[in-house]
Length: 349
Image (tube, rainbow, N blue to C red):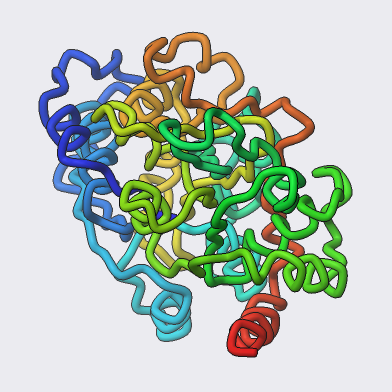
């Protein structure tokens, strides 16, 4: 999922001081002169944040220019690798793509002699990708309605008798399947492997109370603002921006779904060593801290959390909370298309 920021956050990013860049980790090598890396990501406000947190500091440190591209997807990666005509050195990856890309042989194995992940959380240590940060989703609700009687867990979200109100969920099976199981009382530690039939039975019970099956992420919060729904699945970044704009909206940190923002080197890159050095640079403490301050994502380096701006820290999920669920991309590998088709057909019934 790409981080989409409000104008206020864009202004904050653009106004950051260049002094936030930490001390160089490398002495600029002679071989780096004139070298460049092409990184394919999601662009937009996420690209602006990455330029500030990673790309420009890396160039300043090493002399290696960073060129950005957009439109990353598995099909384009596969064509480049198979034709041995690799244009992208590094690609940003959503959770579900990491095991799929590794299985298809599209990524270089991470060189742990260059990329230091010694004190990172386990989810950041994939053999073919580095996990630079953690994003969170959960339940959002209005704070100017219901007198505080709102769902804070997925079981409460499913309990429409005790907590009446209009519900909204995403119109995709990923995350929604896990949410349905937790709504049915499955603990986070037992969600995987997913009991698909149980999840669909739980979805049947909530379906009459779902006012919107949401396609666009921004709708998850705008529908609350417009009083078209009451309780919804959304991301911390969405609620954070609105609260900073004095919108009466809240977010529960009691039961979150956590995802990893990953990056990897495309197999066959002619700049493998420089690509690995960039992936290592992304994992540096000062880079992770700046990225967290920009986005509200949690760092994957364990000791970086305490150094984040306190105003941002309150938005960062507790990675050690056993009620929170890390998305298991390996379980989804090979299942997404079939289950998503079934889910779309179920929505039409």
